[in-house]
Amino acid sequence: MDNTLSLRRRIYRIIFFTDTPAGQRFDNILLVTIVASLIVVMLDSIQAIHSQYRAWMSGLEWMFTALFAVEYLVRIYCSPKPLRYIFSFYGLIDLLAILPGLLTLFFPSAQYLLIVRVIRMMRVFRVLKLSPYLRQANFLMTALRGSKQKIIVFFSCIAILVTVFGTLMYVIEGPEHGFTSIPKGIYWAVVTLTTVGFGDIVPQTVLGQFLSTLVMITGYSIIAVPTGIFTAELATAMHGGELLERECPSCKKDAHDPHAAFCNRCGNPLFPREADKTE
Image 1 (cartoon, rainbow, N blue to C red):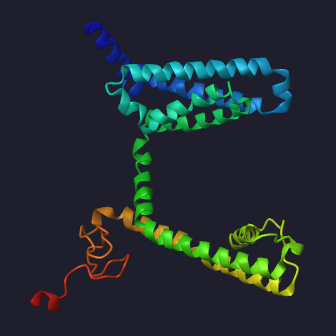
Image 2: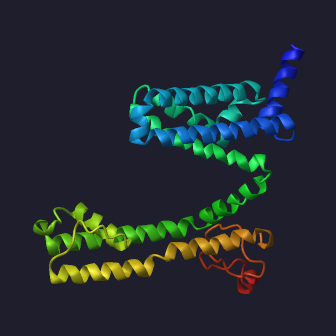
């Protein structure tokens, strides 16, 4: 029993850590294997290579799938808390490296989903001791959470605008000019407002062209709004160590500038006024 536990500990140390030569070799071999599997998938998508070396490519893909499956099972076996590993970020990524190969048994075209194995290359952060840089993603998550309400309001306004513009264009142009329904008009409004401009539907009347110009100008006017919102929250998140830990009584935001008297989200006072205190 002790020998079994000792073996599991040794395997766990090699697979999950890089502080030993064996652990570094394992992760380096794993990264090389991932790169090789990605190269096989990309080469197999070339028709000339696929038609000539189809059997070889299929065999290599199944070999890589089997290797990753064995590695995944070994990780579960040696992990002190298997469920915690299975539902962790890397555990789910390791599972995604296997699932596309199994899906090809039922859906042959799913073999190109094997490209998701590139996500496993994130382990290079651990091998090269760059994990502190990966933690910087916490700033992005904090900024996204902080700007959630503003972004929701922004997209709600955009949804209203495209609905209004799409309906107006349907009324102005009509089915004879390609605007066969209100959803089709909304699709045109989204494409125009986002400055993509596929050109598959084009207004023909003067009034429709005027409205199209208005939509395009509006698109350029508002395209920078979510960027500014996110940038402001990101700057706040990156100075998180200097923020005042005081909750806004109105919107419940829990961090503000040290000398702030008002909430930078909703504008309400952070501290009770003197008149309120005396009352």
